[in-house]
Image (tube, rainbow, N blue to C red):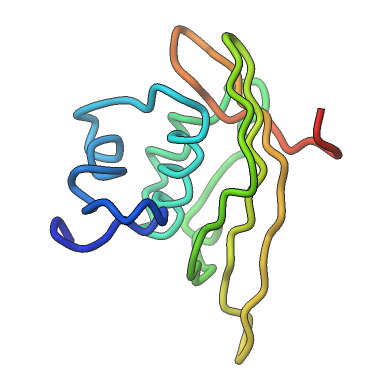
Length: 126
């Protein structure tokens, strides 16, 4: 998959985009980059990465069954980067039978041990 476009939608090759994060060679330096890499982890079924990038206070038990969705594309609606807390609004499109549907979420990210982690969905844009 190294020469293929990254599933996160940046248009960059996977190995120069989210592949760096999923392989452990680098860690995302912004909440948006983390969110994009988490989407890619869902696409590729990378449970260890999803666990690692989820805040320990809100992280659920995850299993392979949580990865049964066929994700098709990602759209970042807007992103607000802060120093210790950031918010990203996105739509993650997935296959539902013969149609395509979207998960729309406003996500909260925080710095935890000097790394961005996903915390939880928000009910509205702050």
